Image (tube, rainbow, N blue to C red):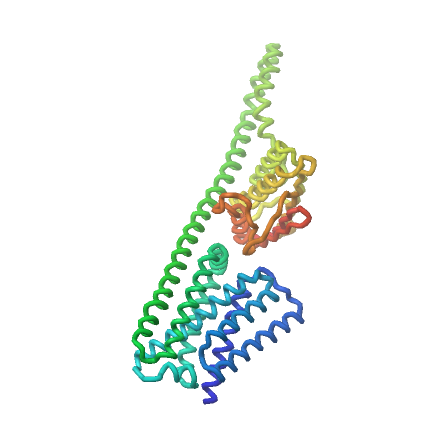
Length: 434
């Protein structure tokens, strides 16, 4: 009996640790001061103790105690994980209701298998090997679900926030299903209750799984579409820079031919024609005139192109570049990082008064490390949602594709990216270790 009690206690503790791990996974930030960590661990231990005591004194399942656990867990998460209370409550409700649902489902299936009168009542009220096995089975399923959620953490968080109303309906329906499941312990031999249990809760479970799978399918489809758009954008930026460089090369390659023609005009003293010819060839040369910042032709092309764009928008682009940047970073990655960030900065500056438009651009190479800092003013309010900037644009699919392209290229080159926005100044810091 002692071994069974220990097993039940371990599974009860695992149940509480699971919910707080899930809440931690969905949190965006947390106060990491030692005294708060200590208090959090103490409160979690207290909830574990309450759950163990409830199962020793009252039984395996209590719908009212389940509501108590949901309330306590939500309050602790709200205080320590900096999450909105609705999110804490919804996560906790889904978690505890699902655990209870699987417990009751296994009790019912086992009851049908053994056809033993009073089996469900014995599992509910008395400690037994069957009760521990049922707890182990339901917690094992829960562990698999948690592992899958951790593996697709970003998608799960996005789906949960985006479709919160659907999950609210699930919580209500699951609670109604658990209400019917309670009857398993009240009317043990009533065939009508068997029908309730089989039809309503299992139908609910099927609908939940189907709906979540449907949502994940479309989210994955949107993600793949966004990846294709991102690749197309990167390729377009890259091709634009290559084309610009090639055009510049062609024009300057033809300089010797222009000099021959000018020399002939001067020899024939056709000075007016010579002046007209000089004006004619000046325009394309001026259009493609580039300042040389580094030994990397793509970086030069990007910076010069964005500098011209900034001047057209009356933006002061302050450029500081140190290094040759002849590294293993691919040209298309430079396009993804520099073109997207500078385009974002220019777009943000266009929305502020003309006299306040500026962009600071620092690109420095220190041995094998590359440091990029970009800052600019912005108007309005920026918000973080699920660790990402919240867009005000109507096209939600395209939201964040620019920054996601930057992030992808940064991670590909063993780098880190951080951004901040305070006092209406947006700053991006990137460190690359190619």
